[in-house]
Length: 208
Length: 276
Image (cartoon, rainbow over all chains, first blue to last red; front, side, top):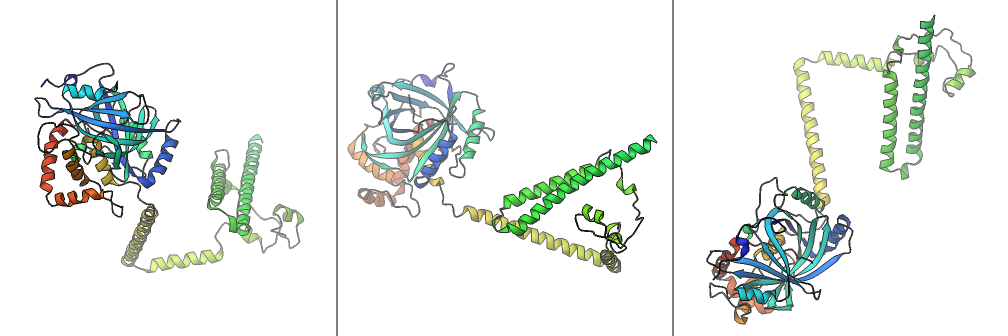
């Protein structure tokens, strides 16, 4: 099998060398309205935006021990919207001075034959889910509140069930590497959502 | 004598300032007392605080006037009653707003007094003798017991306060569940608890959408569903059999999870929905 593609090489410059700063939390279904209400007040004045996405996670196994992972996402409620391919790097917890999780990220819009292309390259689907929720913005910060649905029959996004009785809440900023100051703004914003939601930097490795 | 004249003028000016400050203070006190007596049933706490703030502000201004460098020291001024008269004095009546009708031997000692009231003086004397009578040891003991009582009381009050605070929060129902947070983060980070279409039998990547493997794994993933106390289970009835069968052998599941840990080390993490 071919060596994993480009991103194993260090990428520098342009929009490629971007980092995602992330804080995560959750809110129970019955408190969703209060959270949405508060977010509407706190965030930029914009039309409330909702989304319904289908995400598929693909793996490519090379010689290395760890396979290469790509995420493909498509909108289910917006016909004709491009697909979204995303690479996410190893998350770094950092120290106490940085208030958010940081990971490398590469985002790209693609045509709808993305899955075929990935399959041809040797990628295999690992898992998939449906995400439905709300999107808010405040400056460069993005806040998404969404429910995750498990897909019961492969590829059939109509046959789903909710994963839990909560909505996942994520606060993220995509910024050039080294812009740790943005995590201060994120922390301040997260403070304003307490005690409704506690946004924290959660190390996913802890949950494996 | 220009110096004397200037001093006199200064004294008069200071007295005027003092009088106007005291009049202000008196008016505020009057209206506050009026409020307390007549509007106590619809008086709000903020408005009481406002009145207090006004009074304290006026007292401060009064103090400033007294401490002003141009204000002569009033204690250096001597007031001597020159004439005492049992007759009604209309002028005095007007100046004191009807409180002092006559300037007689009866009222002068009260109004020109510079020492405390006789009863107060008596009480003070009593206290001083009492204090002198008890020994240093006894006094020390009393001080200690008083301090102890104070700190006990303080502790009780602050404890009560804390409890009231947390009690105030308690009725608020929980708005989030940390276990749910973890489950959701794990799901977006590496598909934990989500439909996993990879066959469990082969270590390499399998064909997506193999129906047999899909069914089994969907059941296995059902195991990871976050169960909340009192919440209705979201388990599909058809999976419950699988769940029970596998619950007895968690090792199978763990083994599978262990294999899955390989992709995780690359750890492509949780995903935000993107809009273009």
